[in-house]
Length: 65
Image 1 (tube, rainbow, N blue to C red):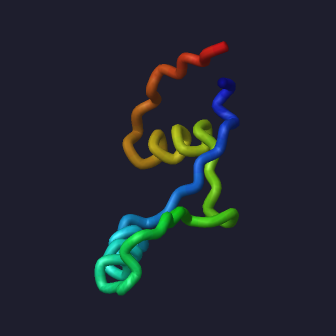
Image 2: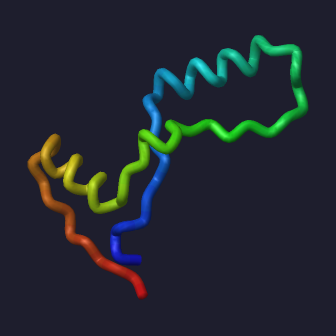
């Protein structure tokens, strides 16, 4: 890849809330897709830049074909 691939991200608190709602639900057999939605899409390069700003470290980037 070239780093422009995107991922759907969400806050850990939102994930925990979703788990809690599921555990308390009467529905036991279903499939759920839990994500941050289209407003929370982040490319892998954007994620690396964000981590660089927070950690002040620049990881080596190796691209695959």
